[in-house]
Length: 204
Image 1 (tube, rainbow, N blue to C red):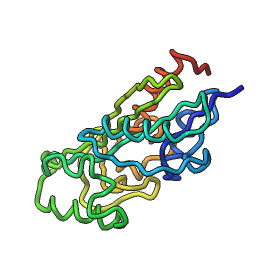
Image 2: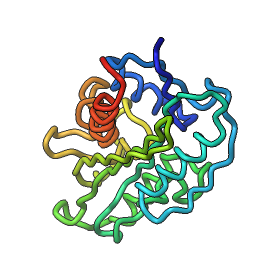
Image 3: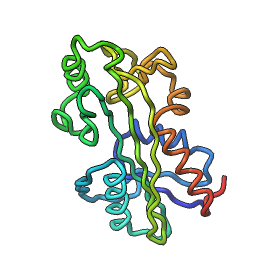
């Protein structure tokens, strides 16, 4: 019987990425909604790792089904020139319901006149797993780049259209789905987590 993995998110774009990256695992991957879990999560950690663990533990505690693995991520954008803002507040930056086009333009405006070598930034993703025995495992993935001067690309979501990756010469919203799922911060954290889970009990 396939093991069930519940990912603590309702973000459909994120779930598509997660399913694609974990597609070779012999596991059923469900969102919170698909698993019938409704719970308020208070993200009061001070790091991506703490917030990911808080989410995973909260959802695991609310899950009725024994034997499942709960995964949660906390990710965000760190802009060096802005003292690593928006950081852990990336999703809440300028308000949770504010469109990302507005958030992105705000960051571009705050960097007006700042040269390329000072526009450095990174996407960070921490993923926490709560295993059936209650053990918590956390992994981290990072992709380095810089803030572009305007939005470019249609393939991503969130801050992807303004995050330029010099190595590829495009923003992460201009990468194909396949490319992004190889190099993104979430992909890197998930790949490491996949290895951690496979070491324990999930076979390909």
